[in-house]
Length: 616
Image 1 (cartoon, one colour):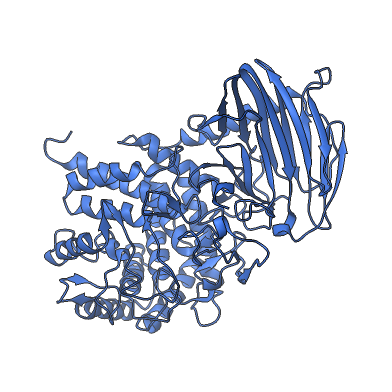
Image 2 (spheres, rainbow, N blue to C red; image 1 turned 60 degrees about the vertical axis):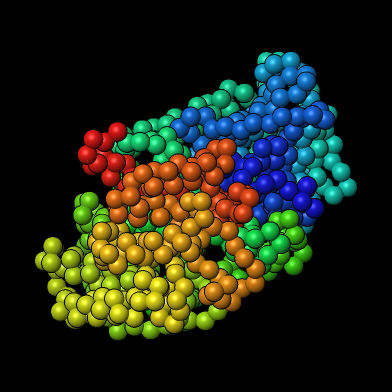
């Protein structure tokens, strides 16, 4: 079974800012949902090699070396194949719609060409609509094929000129899957133009139309990247992370999905397999910082508006407060979790979950993260209107009454509520930023009440959150376990980065949670989280560790840690959620939170290096 699945890291991501696709280094589209990130799958063999469906183009040669790259400063992916007979390549991209209005029609274009010698490709198109639960019928024509089910349809049309020699042999098998064999010599090009949302019409797509779409797509991405104002170290790396975040942004609302995938395991064969195709308030909040740090003000403003809309709605349910911890990309909050029993999971990692049962949890940290990003955006000219301020006051009044209670915490544990120190820290932050906004903008509110509760949260963290035995701040009040979420304490201004209590905490984390620069979020064996199995190091925690080291003045250590962490990226500079024992990427891929933390770490480290006397 293992041999049927590529490594999680062996993928590139393409998209059009309403949905996206993963393309493996062997030329297979093995994850594609439409019309949105959180829609049912069309191709999903990444989660079940036999029943998931795929769109594969690869050479017929027995010995093939493949390489993958992005066209610089774009999301145009090139997969190259080297054989004894020649060199070929596939250019994959998704044209970005001119309008940001949600649409069912999305295009995935695959240009196939031979650049040296000769090469024969096999093409297999095997959709499995709605995670393989929706039947379809297939209609093949001279210039393409249509797959149509009761609710879903795609068409795949041939890219060539009308007078081009017919180079492919095509057929449909008993399952309704389409196949072709394509022989190309140096300089020859063909391709396939997939469109979702309608059953045809089948047409031959002219080559010049495809190249126009290609150049438009390249121009879109290069123009966008060139809006960045960042000129510091690791610019290309930070920009690749920014492009990745842009690919995971749902343009109609500005929402950012945590990852474009579902159910990729945190441990091979384990049960920690979650659906990340939704927008967490936490991720959206952090995004405002990262995007503004690079100069992408429009995207930061869109995320800020999305956050404010959620605050305005106050749509929390099941006792989770005025905010849910996550939403669908359109802002709705129905994320009912279900298991797909007919899918085996990536390398046998079951269950395969869609939806997310953590959506109704109480996680107090989201209020601090949301208010901090709103305050930060306000400092950068994204002002708050009167009605928005009234809703913020309602949220702050809720925090004053509800901050001092057990909760599930940032890591969405399923082992029961605890008095998490990080949740208290973020409650302090929410109240502090509300007080600042009121003072700086002359806004009315229950400021004195907010101040009393903010100070109470501060004193509680300093007494009950501090462990004299460990000489460190602890995960929650009933344990001696450490938590890397607390690496943000100096970042938000709760404690000075040079404070002896913080230096001691950083040293304790280094001893317990850090292994060769990689950082665990906590020790689940010492602090049971209600789930079976273990997990790898969390990449976002490693980048947060870099930021903490830099702010604490440990610049040499921070720089080495950052450079080491960059070696764990895949061949395209992408990261999943975790790094396994052997350096394998684990969890959903690519993960927005990791790329946000990379940007923050790079900017923080660059800033501190510039400040160092005799800097280099």
